[in-house]
Length: 402
Image (cartoon, rainbow, N blue to C red; front, side, top):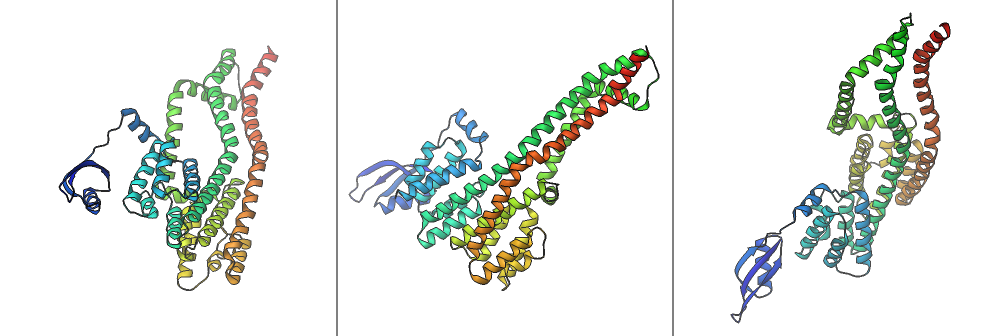
């Protein structure tokens, strides 16, 4: 917040100006620290243009925006620029309206004496628990720049993993979507015209052709109702998946989808190993690190396993004991973690695990389109075959009899 003040010096001179503070009490304290006696203190209401307000409300901070923020923050801190000015610099050059607002608030909190980790912690929806924990550890150890570097590296790794998944699923999603649109248009406009020819000939037709005729008539008459059902079903599915129970079921289902499930499992293992390694290197206690990573993995199955492992460690157990009980973690991963715990090289072992499974994710994403493409071709071929066999072939046979 910014306040306009009127204050008196020890000599009785009147001073006027502006001051930034979290609240009015803090502004008063800051003035008193500067040997000024407040006479009048009034908050300045920040005006914002309508377009600016719309931009701030309609934009969101995505992973790419955060990645750029961490990289810029790390570079400026490494250049020995004080924290608040560094944040102000990032604020001035950021193109994301919401991120500008948040960075400005963080900078104001830091200027008012709040630590960086506390300022970040006020924005839980933006800055992850990992980022807050790492920066807090960096402040305690005196290595803030190293902590920010760790956070930037972790953010980049997570961003790359999500990009790989998005890229791998983009092709089949596009093909299925286009096929669905073409199929809908065919059933609604093209099929009724073809079946109309058969109806006009007034000849006996097979039952499956009769079924296609009725289906075409229905689609032509009630295409709008079909669209409502389709979009309503998609909306209901999205709503359910975003609910607590639906999210849990979807997390379990993802791991069992043919071909894609293996990709998801490897991504979660990579994310677990990478982030746990980063936290342990940053000096975060193992129990706290496991709790943080459980949220970052972003899958309820892995989250529950990791949290149970954290409970085991808290009472004197070991991480690998819980992992051996679940198929979600391959035996190789559990065995390597066991070796890391026994040799005191857990951080290095986790790096090796992350490197191996990251390479596996790369391999799967490269081969995914070549694996899924034949399946899509078969599905589309079946659809075309049904249309030809039930509609076009009867027309051809009838025409040959005339």
